[in-house]
Image (cartoon, rainbow, N blue to C red; front, side, top):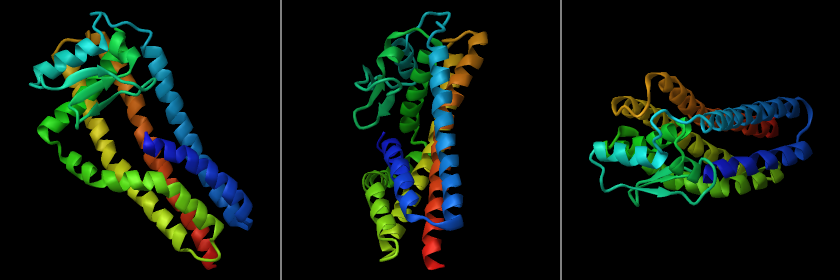
Length: 253
């Protein structure tokens, strides 16, 4: 959530500051890059929201709620110590908290018996199984997490100051670029974790007979749409890095 919020603020700041500070061809190039990044992120968000709105209206044939599916899959994998709780956030605030050993599901996912509820609940349980098995990328992600949290909080301010004082000193801008690189690395490591959790979710749903054969493709579509938001976020960060580097190069010309 911190990193996603960072990019919303960062995109707005970049548009305002670069509109004031840029000149010539570089402005056109970097603006196109910004628009590309913004369009990719918006499309990914619309895709996952569309999939969620569609599949939350389709009740699964076995009338199993997200909470029931999560509890059952956890127990089947020897994770009786992991609790299933209602998340305090809004729509799609579902997550696994490894520090509290808790799978937290948004109210719609927790209580409803929809295809979306099964897919999302099983995905979050997939993360719990990853932690139990010490899935390789978890250790790397945990090492990057403190730096990524700092970058998400201070990155926008550093880039803002760096763009304002671009011609006085490039140091702040380069520090901001470094923070974006840290975020990109964090997203790169997070991506295989999310894809693996989705794969585990489909396996668990099928092996445990939580879904009928004709419901598997719907669950897969829901999980793919959610996974693409992580791909889009990574692509957006890479585009932003390229864009800021172009601005920095303009100073050196």
